[in-house]
Image (cartoon, rainbow, N blue to C red; front, side):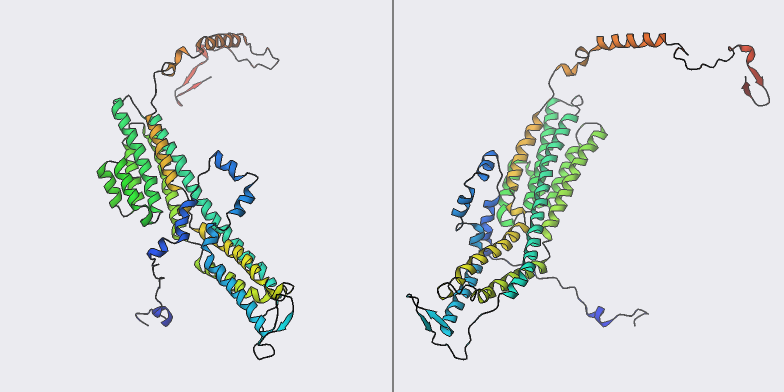
Length: 430
């Protein structure tokens, strides 16, 4: 005890241990699996959708199977399980029996020795298959949900950037400033809006992929001092959002309208926080590791169980292609989940930013013109209003109490003599 406080040895000796930071090499950055992610940032138009649902899609996808990015990224795993299957077939030919090319059976050189054949019953794999399926289904579903949330975050960014600049343009009080000043303010609002989404894109992208392009774009589109401040900031999207808030605050308009625009900007912070959560928090690592171990062991031992059921094939050689096919598809499911788990490097974020820039800079150029809406009385049906008012009020003047049969209670006519002043209570009595 120390000062009346009891500390257990467990609590005293416990230390918070953080996993070591991941160290990646240049080879990791340039591996096929990483480089190929940039080719998955597809944005569909009507042409792509027509091709996507064309009748020949099955043949086209089968024809490109060998060049599939998923297949190429699994080459070492599939090669390993196929090699194990080949080894088991050859081993059992040596320790059991085999057939020559004429179909004649021969005893292997190691038959009837202490060296056994390598086989397993198929039952354990049958029993474990539902568990493996559940692990893979949960993993892929969770990874897709992460991708879907990231895409919705960017969809919200696209919607609210247009909404923010539209409101800024529509609410702008042009009577307070010159037309040149108004256009300058709106252009600044559009650029500050774009700089936030572009900073968010850089924030969610690998440094080696986007840093130089990010700096180049900022210096091309923003004033040099503003661009440098964003680049030097520890958290660049926060700095860009601060610039956007100042740009909104400088717009001449009623404060209620200005608050509406600030609410649209606040949504950007929510989208950024949601995206940061997805980037920094994967599916629990122990779950992903256990799934990978489960799949690996299941497939590595599968050839042992396939040897006997595929005995009708020549020297049980059917175990090799079957192991290859099953490995491709099961490892492929796990690979799909892994590729979807971090969604930002397969989302076309640069395309989103470019479209946002084009759309909001165009919206900023929209200006009210001298139309009839500026003098509304010549287009309002005022004569119709007057005619209706005349008809309605003249009809009301003809209404008489009791003409519909309802009772009417009368009171004595008012005369000044009926008013009596009570000096004690200072009230008027009837």
